[in-house]
Image 1 (tube, rainbow, N blue to C red):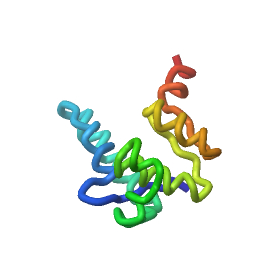
Image 2 (image 1 turned 90 degrees about the vertical axis):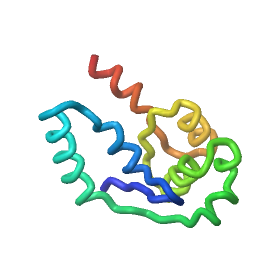
Image 3 (image 1 turned 30 degrees about the vertical axis):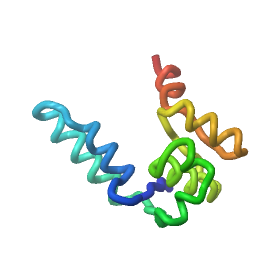
Image 4 (image 1 turned 60 degrees about the horizontal axis):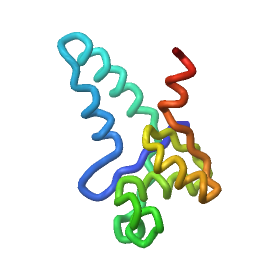
Length: 106
């Protein structure tokens, strides 16, 4: 199962959606794929009030604190943020860096 998290005035999926700003047919294709994916993800919500109390908030801000909160529920986090990955792993949490996986496909 794939998990995501809404938080405050932003949303992890909105950030992903912004990355789909492509020309013409490519945009239509990726947005259709994105829409299909969103239909099957489970959203886990933590309040901003709770998230600002976490150690990750002080270092990384609200979005990454929300990602860390999901990770603490024994969920594997996939991120392109090396500093966040290292921080999560230092807390004994499971995180993979997307860029490392991408390198394996080359």
